[in-house]
Amino acid sequence: MKVWLGVAVAAGVAGCGPVQNTAVDLASLPPGKALIILRVTEASPDSTFELSTYDPARQRMTSSPLSGFQTFNLADTSDQGFLWKQVDPGTYVLASFTHQHHWALCFAHQSEAFTVQAGQRLYLGTLDTPQFSQALSINVDAHGDRRIDARFLKHYFDGIPPVHTEMEKLPLNPDGTVMLSSTGSVDGVENAVMVPASFKPGYTLYGQPICGGYFR
Image: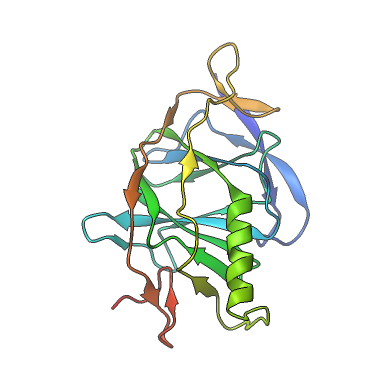
């Protein structure tokens, strides 16, 4: 029996147009795909949280502008505070927290990574979003970066809290399925094994350090 779940998605380009409910089938993943689930302490308008494919042996993100990044829009949480995405199997690192596409915290120094297999439904834990909003605001003010330069996404690497997710007890239905929203649930969810991770930042063509980009 399939389980259908209502999930908020943006029409058209992310952040543009009205948000509406769409039915997404989470019971039968496409072949070779996995499901990752994240919870946030509160929705954060105009903010995103990015994951990247990751090579732990080389301590390097393996994503590119065309593939490897998974972005959660933190304004689109369900009424239970959850976000979820279908992804390719592999190892991922918690990469960055971005606000308004202009400023971002890069978790290069103290992060966490996890591995997900095809067919898995993996819960990453709860992300404390207010602490990252506060840390980003402090960095922007400290560097005098309130003036926006639309050409660049400004990344900050120092003086930020280490990214960490809390594995709290998930809201369960009587049948043991996980209640991701009031309109539906999904079964077979496992807790991710989160391990400490770090990675080297990349650079823009102008030599500015960023999460990802060109590596030296």
